[in-house]
Length: 318
Image (tube, rainbow, N blue to C red; front, side, top):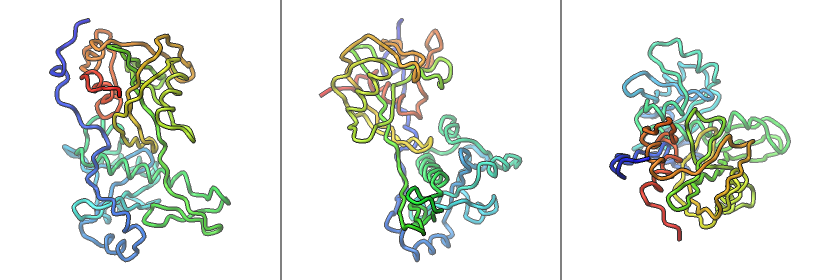
């Protein structure tokens, strides 16, 4: 199969979704009650509104995800409000509401209620909003899942501007957690290994991935997950970059891995398929020109960038 020249066929490198946040998180202000009171009263304060999996937007080209605090209150009662940080000195918040309440707003002609993945894939908001939206969605969903103390079972209270939950009964402190995930492209010369999950859209193939287990290094997780899912042994591992993945709250740790074997044996509980692809075939998948309609993940996902870096000969094992 012939392929367009590289890199001209692929065009400029796209942005990686949910990264390069412009917010200054100002973590030192989370415990400062006076500062928090002043920021809530600041006329420049604005908030993102999250209802479960849904994000509330003002319709437009692009749509606007920010609301004044008064306008956000008018949308409905909040479960939680979390201080996200400052943008050029202006306070930014994430305000959570029940998903049913957010979906009820779909009747309004001026609002668009949709999920964060669709927002990123379709470019519905300016790119600078994606990182704080990911931050807001992740921490608000953590609150929704951690209403009770894991130590004694008592209901907990949100404190420190939403960055801690405190148990009034046993005084245990609970903090937001992010789940680390390795995502890796296994390469062997001019071929790479991609897999298909049953959850993928038809025709899409992607990097292998899996959660890091307790007491496990990134490199060990890459080798274990690759062997478990596809039966391939890996040698050298090269770190690429990372991406927050707010579904619900993971950190994708991107790597390239050197294949030490070729015979594929898939774990059918994880994958419905895995196979080797040539660079020419991968280029056609990246450019959406594959004769069989095969594709890679969209540019907002780190898998797209991991694959593209290998196609463009940026991977060097050391």
